[in-house]
Length: 307
Ligand code: FAD
Image 1 (tube, rainbow, N blue to C red):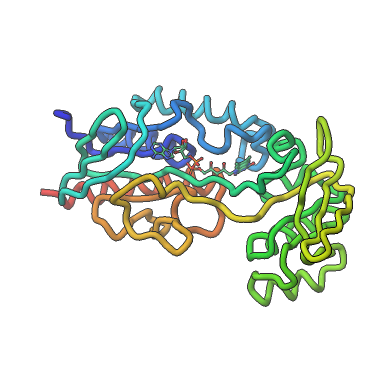
Image 2 (image 1 turned 60 degrees about the vertical axis):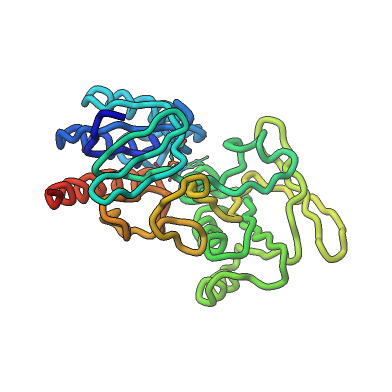
């Protein structure tokens, strides 16, 4: 650990890689640590990244490969290592990986998040073939079709309302007899004619071979099972931020997201956070990339304050 970095970036998803490009152009001594060895983050699981401006229809995997090549062309260095701890030594931070330790002046945490799975048969096999965890990303593929949304919180209600403008019919499936989302969203859902709520219900199986054709619904009060014909299934049962396995992070909110604003500044001087792992409204590639750019601006300003 003889080398001193200006910036250690944790995670090579959209936020981490955008930050790497900006950091290289700002001539910061930088390293990107990625636990999987593959760059792109969650988006590599998407068959089509169709809402990123300028690249209609590109696959998530291809986008990840392209951005990694772009970052490497600017001089960015990627190392496969999983970070388990950040030690705050004042004007220096020590980033502890499973393989190595990295001494740095600043850290950008861009470890992302993962959608919570339902864990039912057919879910994994049909992900990207009708099963989706992101209405904003995939809703447009289901124009005039029938879809179901699972969940009862704000995100599920937002998703149902968004999809109701695109799809012929939206089933909202909720395991309880009352929604959890804010009142104003509930009212909107109740007043949208093409949204129908199935109360006290869970999805027990996703059916289809090459694409989703139907889902099995179980009523939790009667145990009765019915089959609902749908082309799309949107799961909005929560996200899990990747903050669990890293000690020494700045303050988290109740759901485990790092508290940082658009400038990616956290409560600990020298530790910045952005992308899906920070508290924010919309978790998308474009907003993650924006965070990467903003973070490096904040890092550059911070470095000027050091002795
Ligand atoms: P992530 O993409 O989650 O990347 C985080 C990276 O950090 C990962 O590579 C991870 O391995 C690494 N990491 C985590 N912990 C550690 C650690 N301890 N040490 C080292 N590395 C670590 N958005 C769109 O805009 N349009 C779409 O069409 C779209 N489709 C999607 C489809 C799917 C199936 C999914 C799952 C998401 C989709 N999204 C889409 C959302 C988008 O992918 C995310 O908003 C975006 O990837 C967030 O970027 P990020 O860099 O913040 O985090």
